[in-house]
Length: 170
Image 1 (cartoon, rainbow, N blue to C red):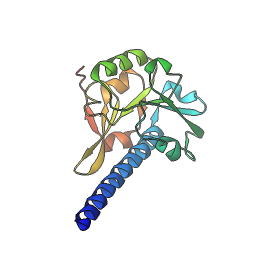
Image 2 (cartoon, helix red, strand yellow):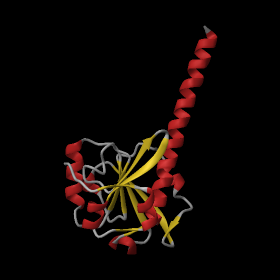
Image 3 (tube, one colour):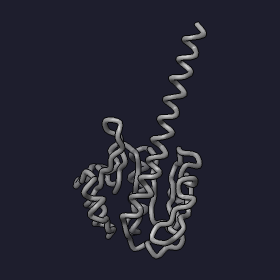
């Protein structure tokens, strides 16, 4: 019986470690996406990334501690309500209800904020960049229509490795 508990404990610990690693890679991918994009908020100093409904603890702060984007230090802000949003370059949105997602998109319309999420269907629902897992690999979807509407430039190297989404199904 002790052997079974040991293996269950080992399995749970390994699964948690795998999730933590995936979370770390999502934060790192956010950094890479940021380096391949430009928007009208690029003059903001420091480069600001706002995280809505944070689920990763201090990972964003840890990953971006010694990172510069466009020669600027990076500042991470954590908010729980879109009403608390300040000027930012990127808004990372954690899983949320679709109604709240519509409210988020309405409140940032025409503010040239790049939106990124790991939420399922984010790009199809009007988000700009979705990080998702397929066959145990993290991939990127980009809603080019929304990116263009907000006058955000995405480097062609990033576009080449991403799946492009044109629609918007709110």
